[in-house]
Image (tube, rainbow, N blue to C red; front, side, top):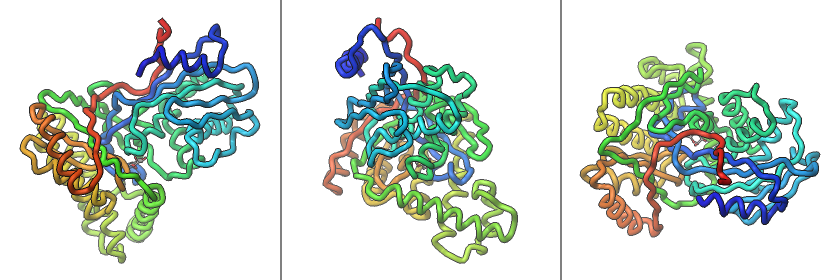
Amino acid sequence: MNLSNLTTRFFELYGNPDEKPKLFFAPGRVNLIGEHTDYNGGFVLPCALQYGTYLLIRHSAGPVMRFASTNMEFRTEIPLERLSEKVGSQWVNYPLGIFDQFRQMNIAFGGFDMLFSGDIPNSAGLSSSASIEMVTAYALTVMLNAGQLEMVDLVKLSQRSENEFIGLNCGIMDMFAIGMGKKDFAIFLNCRTLEYKRVSFVLNGFKLIIANTNKKRGLADSKYNERVAECQLAVTYLGQKMPLSKLGELSFMQFFKMQDTIPDELVRRRARHVISENQRVLNAVSCLQKGDIVQFGALMNASHESLRENYEVTGFELDTMVAAAQKINGVVGARMTGAGFGGCAVFLVTEKVVNAVIEQVGHEYEEKTGIIPDFYLAEVSDGVGEIINHQS
Ligand code: GLA
């Protein structure tokens, strides 16, 4: 990202170069393991990426919000009194949802000039939307001196914004990873209590490859909400045996004994995924702590299998991508990452096979699906923050 071009663009759009904007950055995230567990009060293990969203922002002269992006054509000016209204299905709904949360907390603000610029591939399941939300929330706390808001508050309000304003019943993982991310660490988070631990994730001799299926994630949001509802149904059935509010409260053994309480085979499989995936996260963390990368990779493979068989969120493209990777020597583990239904897979590979994996998997994937994939090397990076001295 060329920051000086970004500043030039800002002044082209909004003029008045004497009033310097501040610059903020929020990363995207990749989840290593623990998929579809967050909204079930389970465990996750994501990390922040080097890709993310930049935001240049300054107070504006009038009571109006001006939004622009270097990624999207759509730009708009919204008077403060209309800030709680959604704008079709435009990207500005992500920052608008955050303003709405600040308003609900009775934090007063005037207008802002804003220019967003992101390098996270869109619709890839790397949390470009949570990255926009978190960069906006963090920037607002600085611009408004709202020091009473801690990082965990920004994480929670961004999730509420996504649930209430955007209408996706997502969990807290994405925002949490973006808020708490740290270079060379994965975040082991208990989504029920929000207790977390940073686990060292320095990959000596290994690399993380992110493989984008480039499959459009049509209907992904409605299917996602459908899974959320299926898990709630499982809780209702299991709750007849013991008090239960989230699947994540159950150990695998408890579930095993009670699973017949769920009459519906499909709902039982959904629950089986969540509960087994939870255990895999715990095992994965202990593998990392022992430096057992090979076993960690095996857990990634098992996670994908459960997401395919029990949770049914993978689909032809992700399955083809992951299977193509898993059969290559030097690929330690491979799985889909994020919500699924398209989007990205993540491979853990030995350093020396990186190029061969990209070439071989790329070739096989294109041959079988007719889609050209993209590959990125992930660097485990820091969470949201302000970039100081960017104009020098
Ligand atoms: C999306 C959601 C997250 C999480 C994952 C699946 O990324 O935003 O909250 O549920 O899917 O693990």
